Image (cartoon, rainbow, N blue to C red; front, side):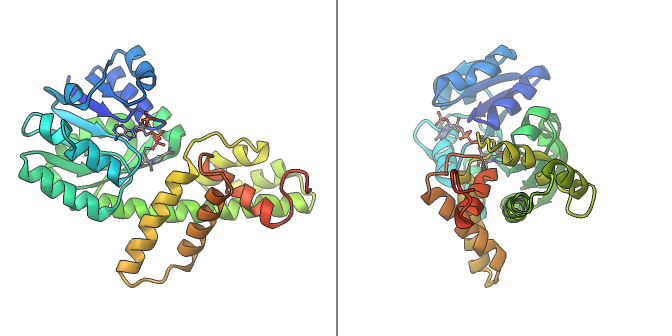
Length: 296
Ligand code: NAP
């Protein structure tokens, strides 16, 4: 039984923390909107109203917040993790952030006597709820080995991909693939609808061939029913494609598809869709094709 602090109990963090508590660990959760700790408490965890209280005595500290400034704030802010945690604590940052920020924070953590892994995840809300995420981990091998029993409780696929920051680099590639995939699926759905094809039949047969994918499995329902409650918010995917395009620029790479989907995510946000699931990229295809609500 390990004393675990879990900071950030949103769409992903809440079910992940619940898995850790259900497995018998002593999990103390912190989230600014306190009601989000209710599922953790129902699973036998404890809720608290400050990071300092959450991390007191914790051997493992999990973080799952939206963006680089949030992780920086949680770790380095006044009464944050570095100020309040026990020396030697193992910090697992599951958030998706900039690789360079992950490296910088890992260096700061080491200087303060902590161990920090970047451990972004893939698999969406469904994967978090089922405990079947993929986790791509950057950091020291010994720290990865120490974190492994915890990671195995939230994930099916757990891979150490290199030193600090590597997990975030792999996650950036993941987000490029997923965004391009969703955009292609959205275009295929509108294409099939426009030609009057039986969509259920079409997607069933596409799913069995090379066009099949987790994106097709998990996102076709949202697209067919036009229900875009997140899931994974377009605002967050926009953040991630910003990471991809900046890192590509830094390496002198030309990634036309990455640049295009980054623009399409910006376009979606500018139309007020930032809070919707990323499957709502479909709405952009509809708008540009004159097939938005009332235009069919
Ligand atoms: P979310 O639902 O917005 O959850 C983020 C949580 O962090 C919220 O509950 C928020 O609390 C809390 N938070 C924000 N700033 C904080 C701070 N400074 N200190 C403490 N807590 C803070 O987002 P999510 O979908 O779970 O995503 C979390 C991370 O996972 C992101 O980096 C995202 O890119 C990544 N991710 C998401 C998915 C997905 O499918 N959703 C999949 C893979 C990876 P309040 O609501 O009270 O502000």
